Image (cartoon, helix red, strand yellow):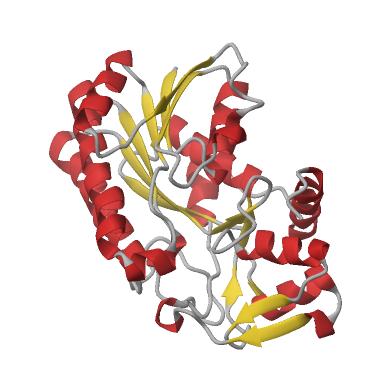
Length: 314
C-alpha cells in the first residue's frame, strides 16, 4: 500500500514507519520537526520502500494537497502538540495543531478516500477505578487543553465516518516508552528516570509518587497502531492499547535506580492535570485485532536503557 505517516520523525512515529517498511509498504512522512528529529529516520530512509520525507505543517493546506496527489491508502495521523504543560500555558498552539491540523487532514482524506488512523491518548480518561482497567466506554475527563484538543479531534474524525462513510479508527495508547523517546523535560517518565540513573543524578518525582501509569513498550505500541490501520473491523471504532498492569511512579523509580536515597519528591508543576491511576483494559484490541503486548516491563526497561547508553545521551 501507499501510506502517509504524519509526525513520522517523532518517537512513536519512527517505530510506525519502521514497522510499515518491514511490511513492504511505500511510506511517505510529513513532519514540521517541532517535536520529532530527522535523525530518528536515519536507519530507515535507505529502505527501497521509503519514498519521501516532507518538511511540512499539517495546517498548511497547499502542502497537504500536493502530498495527497500520491493517492495514499492509509494516513496514520500521529502529528500533534503533545506536551501537557505547554498546552496549559499555550492552549491556542495545541488547539491549532491538534484540532485544526486534524481537520485539514480529514478533508484531504475525504477527497481522496484515504483511511485515517488517528492517534489520540489515554489522557482523555477519568482516573481508573481501583480494580477495573479503563475500557473504551470509560468516562472521559479532559483535564488539560491537550486532552481537550485530542477529544475534539476524535469527535471530528468519527464524524467523518458517520457523515461521509470515511474509514477511520481512533486509537488511545497508554503511556508509551522505549528507544528514541526524548530524555529531557516531558520526554516520558521512563526515559527521564533512566537518563538520570545513568548520569548519576537524583530521580525527581512530581507529587507523592502514588500516581500510577500503564507502561506500554514502543514496539508493541507501533504494532498496534499499524494493525489498526490494516483492519476493516476497526473502522469507526475507538480502541485502547496498554500493558494491562499499572505501576506507581514511586515503585517505577525504585525499580530503575534500586536506591531510595537517589529519589526525591518535588512539588507538582501541573497537579490539576495529573491522573491518579491509569490502567488499560485492552480486551477490545485483543478481540478485534488479535493484538496484545509481548514485551514485559523489565524487558522494555532494559532495551531502553541500552539504547540511551548507545546514543551518548547521558
